[in-house]
Image (cartoon, rainbow, N blue to C red; front, side):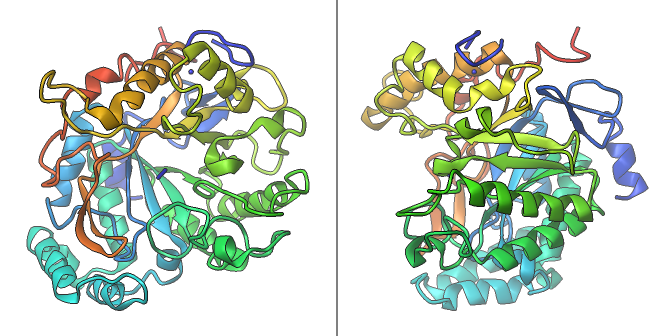
Length: 425
């Protein structure tokens, strides 16, 4: 885990699944700053994140609700897409049974999980989703994706981490490629480049049987430490290019999502050295992340905030440039606490978020930009050693029944609307 009107640098599987998704003319591609379908009409990403990258190795929440209930809630609340996260550990051990995966998660070094308590989460998940009793990690992903398809929900697969665990910090070993310059074990020991490339290929191959998988993100929140990334981003261009080639070779229909450095907050270098996209024309989408802490000094001064975002990421939307492409805010969010006096988002800890939302929402509205909110999950099977951990940024409550804070959707203003782009009246 973790665009306003014009600003500087920023201008304004099966036949059954195919029929269910007939309202989307797949596959998708890009045209200038837009994502478009095969008819040339814009497809706006209005997504929610759904985590599946932690130690148990499957999408969260199946211990709380049947998968169809979760998919229905997503669709009924206006989302058309899910950013579904996964680990390279899962991608390279896809046939591990879900039962064994939970056992391994409880016994794995460093989780500190209560084995009995985590087993209870698995038992609850099987009771609500009986298919899990004989499922593997990858077949569970497949069932989730197919269920989303039955509700006309598209999916972007996001490689969140290599080692399955919570993300992110600068000492989790998942931040930067181990073969890149400036190796630092604390930031790179689990980010094995060869395994990463193999995992991308495996998941891209898997996606060929799921037509509602419209794209893959190369890596979540790349972050360098020490002397890493001090070569004019040469490692980023080289290794991201290799990853993109692996995805495209296995499934040329997919959009390929490139995130920048500094935890996906900075693509500014593309202004001066644009990415060579000739090997996968019409398939590159860029992503960035924004929370109130991303630029804390400026997060409540909207003119300053807009300028920083424009210089770092928003310039990508300027039409007709060598760097132009769709720009997807693939993570943003706010604590879903409720202020007892107002009934809205509130509390001392969210005061800064309140001010920040008043900047980021108009920014996104003015540019009619693509987005994905963090996150649908009301909690986790296991997070940082805690079984049945809560997600305070979760749109769903801890029971995964309904909005944790129903006022949040209205706080997003007109972000759900599509007002610009090809085919928009």
